[in-house]
Length: 147
Image (cartoon, rainbow, N blue to C red):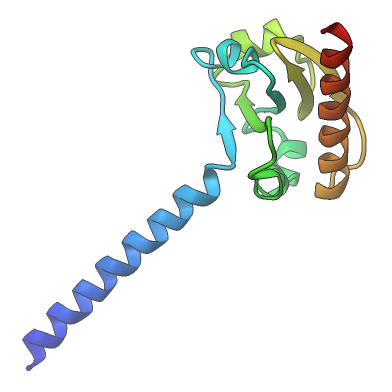
């Protein structure tokens, strides 16, 4: 009987670990990590606004953000043509140099390969969300005027 209970407990533990791993993967999917290999192609995506956080692991201001960027990613999940990204400047130094990152954290909006705005407002989800929605609206209006 004890042997059967041990097997059942191991099976339940294995199922719980699979469920937790799937939830972790899903929650991390709202923020896309960009690298030297992916950054340029991603920010050039047609009709897509990218709101990107540039940080380094050792920066206390980046650490103080806590889950802010992930929380923003969750709130923006499903927003048409808006992606939330992040770049680790310790790993992807050429990307950060190319887009003129000199302090951390830095938040920038890109549209069709061009930087269109730099965020300098309050660091809370609602302010970040309103900012990127406003920038997406501006980008859409500019595109309509160009056509």
